[in-house]
Amino acid sequence: MFKLKNWKEVPIGGAVDQPGSAMENKTGSWRVERPVWNSEKCIHCLRCWVYCPDMSVNTLDGKITGINYDYCKGCGICAQVCPEKVKAITMQPEQ
Amino acid sequence: MAKIVATTGNSAMAYAMKQINPDVCAAYPITPSTQVMEEFSKYVADGVVNTNLVTVESEHSAMSACIGAAAAGGRVLTATSANGMALMWEMLYIAAGMRLPIVMALVNRALSAPINIHCDHSDSFGARDSGWIQLYSENAQEAYDNLIQAVRISEHPDVRLPVMVCQDGFIISHSIERMEYLEDDEVRKFIGDYKPMYALLDIDKPVTLGSLDLQDYYIEHKRQEAEAMKLATPVITAVAKDFEKMTGRAYGLFETYHLDDAEVGIVAVNSAAGTIKEIIDQYRRKGIKVGLLKPRLYRPFPTEAYVKALGHLKAITVLDRVDSFGAMAGPLMLEVRAALYDLPKRPVTIGKIYGLGGRDLEESHCQYVIDELVQIAASGKYRELCEYITVRE
Ligand code: SF4
Ligand code: SF4
Image (cartoon, rainbow over all chains, first blue to last red):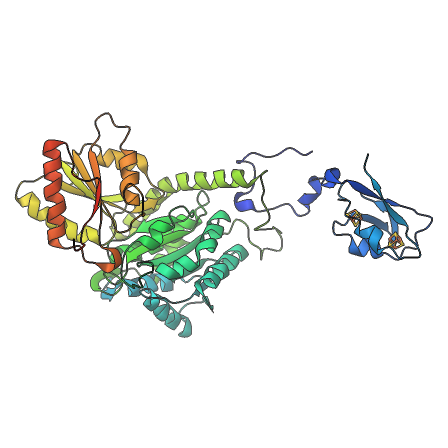
């Protein structure tokens, strides 16, 4: 967890003056189910990447490389949109 | 060189806005401030200002557009009254919370119902907790001077809060008085260029404004807002000093009239102060030591300064042109009375509600107040903590 700033340290009025600073706040901790991606089944159609509301599907050169569990909230959308005949993502309970 | 003119409070505010020449003005005209926008839009149409005038469909939109323009990095002004300001309500808090230096010309008017277009202070006093600085003006000259100073106060790096400049609807807004205008370049020099702290249009320094702020940071931002209000008091004094250098007209946190050697005193904002001063002169001629404190500031409330100025009195009557229904007394009275509480020997402080919906405060009402104060000073006892005056009983 990053350190919370005091009132003298934060920019006034709730301004966010560091673009992308939401990265500091890892939001994956409250996930109850995690998507597990099977690289062998995946056809790299990128549907999961398009639909993930938290930009938590990692890609490289147009191919899926895995799930970013630091931010994935476990909503299951990726598993839902993965094509019926492929189903490369399964939701599994967090331990 | 000052220009001496005979004009109304509304024209004076419109003229100040012309001289300030803001980047953006978004407004929706409402009585009794209509004339401010009517005249300002003429300045826009005539090309004597560079302002982008946004004509909107409601006051809620007016304040929203002001917020957008201020967040973009512009110098922004607007004008309104009463129900117009009431419709801006949620946006008032957002302007202050986002720390946007917006300046509002507020022509005080009663809130409906029953429908009434005349003066009282229920609009601005109702907004006392919104985070806006409030400057009060006795006459057109003060409204004009306050509006120009408001720009500097609001944009000061320690402050960055919106400011409303209040004057009494009709009594001042529509009456013609003698007053002095500054030259355009004097005003421009006095207010200087505006340097926004965060501007959405500054693409070299990208920022997000107005984002979600929950349990982990909201109170930190409110603490900052409270601090800005605290720091506003010395800024207001410093800006007034500079203004005095330029104009010779002295402003402070309040004005006093025969207060130093007074035994009893009245506290009242805006135009009522003019009438009260007249009656004080009458009583002074009779040897009665009565004085007046006319607050220029309601927010921030400069507690220490008020206590210093009022602490020596035996009795005080605070006049509120607004009621806080069901409260112990009017809002200004409660705050003045609470401020004096820590004094070892405190003045007896009572309140009167007067003038709602534009009812005149007449000579006889002021005499009634002073006669009662003299009795209280002698006996140390009051009859009623707060009562309505100027009403038919
Ligand atoms: S579970 Fe939801 S948040 Fe996590 S990767 Fe899938 S779509 Fe994204
Ligand atoms: S939706 Fe399924 S098949 Fe398509 S890229 Fe994602 S995991 Fe692979």
